[in-house]
Length: 143
Length: 411
Image (cartoon, rainbow over all chains, first blue to last red; front, side, top):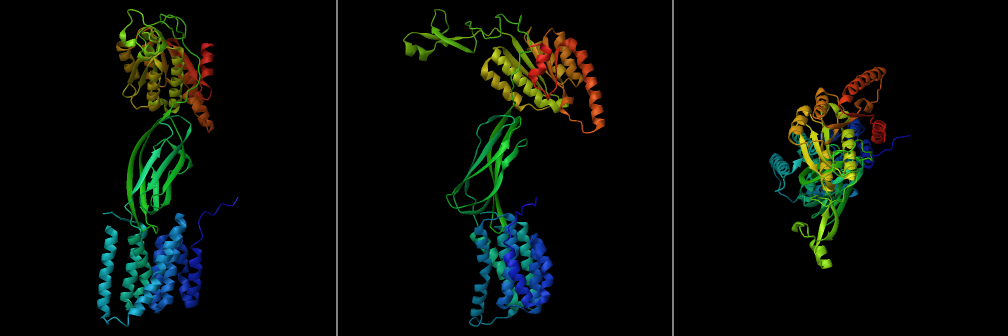
């Protein structure tokens, strides 16, 4: 008798979409797929895939909404795989999808606001963002 | 303020986030740092939209606090959420010795405000005291990035009572009491077992007046009790760790014969000979029976075996003369055999219920089978030597106790 597959397959949807988009964008990016496949089972490798994909996008300067969508799908794949493993309720998938896709309107908002805002020294913005990120993570860690 | 505990998963996500920001910085692609926006949004939603105080009421419901060993009971956890909790992990900490046979003692739930939920599971109860101590409530945000834990201390005890079987009386009551026969005597006396209500006779003590019956009939009525002058039976249970294999059988045998004594209307006492001996004085009735059963239910095999000394001390100070002793022991140690000799030397009638520890073992190899045979022969020799000190019932625990007693006593 074949063992019953208990794990949900929802992570496959963003995974397949991501694979197609990566193949369309740059065939070299498909070299990262083995890490993502392992990331479906182990979250640490999923996080490693996110870093590698980010590095690839930065290196090849493939950003914009397409690059952001790739990152959204990558995060969605890794997180959905986690929810699949946990057998989470459907509502949690909805929260996840909504939260992750909020990055797109935020990006467009930033693009829209960028010409209006006064130009700032990029290093200063970087420093402010690093500090803000540091305090945000600290606050999350402490409660 | 709610304390968040970061999960390992969140740590990986933070590391990835920091790594991407630093990579953007070092590759001079700072304008592309928006790539981390999905991660930031995930953290933002998890922290600001799923931050409960874990306001949950939880109760545990057990059907009874005393259950026969080997029975399966339903344990029910009732939960009521006073806030919306998208992901609540509930775990009832199971006492040792209980085995989940259906359902699970742990579950993840999603509750709306005011919603009630019930978690049910079934456990197989073994003999002994099983303390349910606490329930763990753990909230994890839907994405598993942080968790809030709370331990709800709800103490409840479940007692696994030994399984009792019907057995014949393996001892004679003749000559050990004033009234004759195994049934309770309806003689009026200062007993504890209620017999009947009758009209007040001059000389009756006031404390036995039944006021309810007096009000009902208009005449002064009194309670009549059975006489306490019956055979005294003392149950001596050898709680030595050497007999751990048959200890449950030993307790079952003691409980069965105690029920037999209750039905016969005899008074009985109990000596549970562990490291600290437990002596329950001789008494009558159902209440006393259940008290003794409670002690038997909670009995555990002990490391120290001082049974010979304990028996001698109690014979000198507590045991009534001409009592019938029922000794439950596998007779594996010199101490337990010395105890039997002591009982006999003081002139008591002793019946030994001795579960054969080797009958509880299934040999897997030929060497084991041979070893068991040798040990069984050695045991037979020991029992033959001990036969002069009392009536020994050598009990193969795979067979009913009734049959073992019937073989020896010819019931």
